[in-house]
Amino acid sequence: MIPLSFYLGLSALLFSIGLFGIMYHKSGIRLIMCIELMLNSANLNLVAFSSYTDTLDGQVFALFSIALAAAEAAIGFAIFMAIYKMHEKINLDELNLLRW
Image 1 (cartoon, rainbow, N blue to C red):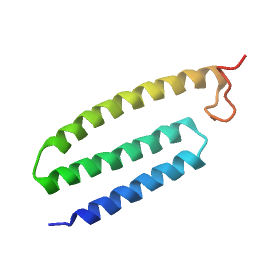
Image 2 (image 1 turned 60 degrees about the horizontal axis):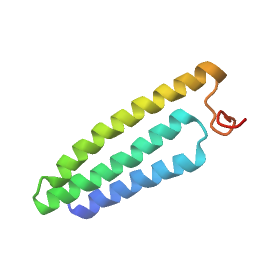
Image 3 (image 1 turned 45 degrees about the vertical axis):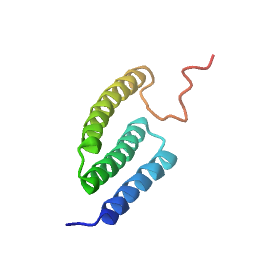
């Protein structure tokens, strides 16, 4: 059986890659992909601890989290596609839709 520390290390690596991507990239699509990577690392933690404690609570919560992440990604992509139709770019630094 693989020790819990390996799962936690992999989850920390995935989370740090996602955090670096959020801080470094300016494209909206990459931003959503990095957020999804961070959510998947949290799901990996939930499933690892659920397996470690021999309960199903973490796995059920991870399934709900995956469903919410899919809905968030679909809404985010729809918003970015609407912005792309208006401005023909999705660079978040150059967007000022809410300013007058």
